Amino acid sequence: MNWRVSILAVVLLMPAVRAADARLVATNFPLAQAVLSNNCIVVSATGQIAVAWTSAQAIFARPRLLDDIQRAYTASLAPGKKCGFTITPWPNATNVWHYVNKDHEPSDIIELARFGPDAACGEMLFRVDGERFFGNFHVVLALRARPAGSEKTNYAVEVWAYPENGVVRFFVRNLGLIERFFRKKTGEIEQIARAVVLQLNREQTAGVGTVVIRSEAGL
Image (cartoon, rainbow, N blue to C red; front, side, top):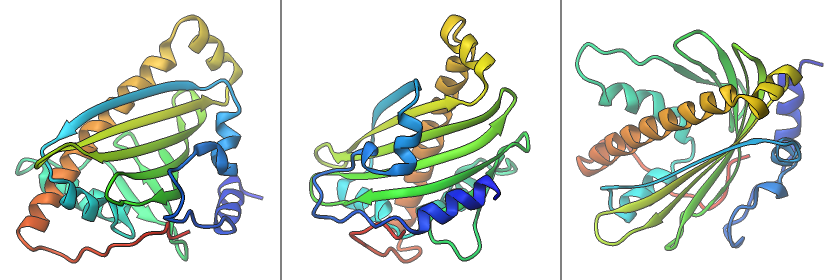
């Protein structure tokens, strides 16, 4: 069976995370634990963005947030500049997307779970499986957001990455080449996420589009 089909089959059988849960714990989800059980590269980033928590909640709670990311990021770019990636939903799936970067390298993104957003925080958990110059890799990515006073929101990005290739893992341990790659990519994710959130906030402030609030992950 194709590995992408295998992942999809498992995901569609997974239960949704409920709003009553205190927070997401990555190891509670089999597809996340399958990555975290390895000796992963760990990268994190934190920051603050000038968006009110009520607006951040509405953005965070969009039922299919990844569907909005490419459009919003493209809208945030300077005139004449093109978006360098494509995100397309898998047919008949509510939580799986196919991603292709500017170098035509593919990945599949699965939204594993979502908590909130309630008054205190919001969290999303993803698994990414893809191919790059060093071979196949698997990533677990957690996005967390919390209120930070008037008109501001704190955020955190956590990444656990595992390259399949044993030679690559040797270089990770001894030279740090692939670790630097994932650190760079985490920084790029952070920049894109900030641009998308600011664009969606502008649209919400202007009354563009419809925002739907939900309390469960649509798995």
